[in-house]
Length: 216
Length: 269
Image (cartoon, rainbow over all chains, first blue to last red; front, side, top):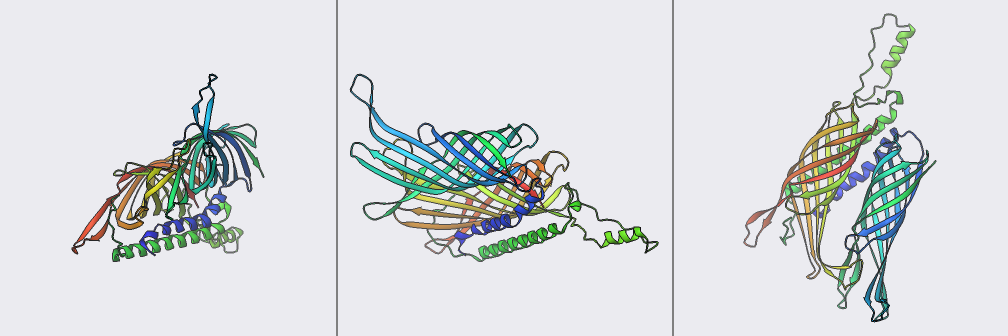
């Protein structure tokens, strides 16, 4: 093993420990044998590098390892559209669009969520997800008529916290703030044949509202 | 992180010894966890204590009449498998770490695997990974919204501790559990620098003895589950040997003293 790969040792230990013992340990405290839930949510997301907010929708599908701990997969879609514009010479104040950028961000992550109580009507919750994220960037230049599409991807993470309001025994309304962290990359080749990394930072914060439904 | 040295170091004897010790620690830890898991499956639910107190072994009085029903049941209790007197804990955590010399936070994940030696005292080993990536970037075009950047150079750093720890839980009865811990062991830092303009790649590994301390609060969610939030301090001055062009060996150091915050789940099994 080279020194550069030494970090894989604890990572391997972590994976082995998680896969072997955590499900068994969590199951000891589980009050319900097999409860699952799905959360559908929507809201706004704003990258730190971008300008303005963008709409997002998403879902979390999870198993209840205990009344307090959920684990599963999450995904979603953030759509971002920005234009390069200038004022026209006409008197009605219209604007001329020179170019347009459409972006779509899709995360696919494993997550773990902790509900800090299971007795009160208001349930504070906190969660963390890690996985992969993709970005599709469509650029249209109206001046030259050119149109390009670039796809970026990388490992990314997300953390969120909020409050759930228990509506019925199986339905909750969740309000959350979240942070998305990622530097999505693609390989770009220049005219000399050299390969470069091109990166888009999608670090940002957002707020969303969702419906969380249990089923067995 | 000072890692401007361009030599590719051969692993030293100290490094190899540390790596061997790390592997042995992990193997022993996983073996112990496997044994604990196998034992816990044999324990009847009734004997699985609902608190973190150590269950006492059943007492058997001296027999006066071996054939009496009471003594028969006592003998049955005596021959029943005795539950283990100590229990295991696994703490999975994630958070942010900021070395004092680096003006930025880095994500960190890790685990503590230990045994509850006393109701208030647990000990074991901990490990984790702290990642740091820094790019030298140049903006591509002038697009509105998301701005793609060209990566001219990149530095990746990974900090890996491997330590033994002791942790004191200041209460075992209340919902909020204040706790504090200290750990000592070895720590490695691997720094990889890539300059895509000159196609140069440099990897440097630093290591040394290190220590860590932490304090925080745990929220008891269930009998075997706790949600912990803590702040921690990492103390280390990691080093590597560098031989210059005149053959003189120098020591290059990276200061990894810093503070961080993390949250995690503490699972008792």
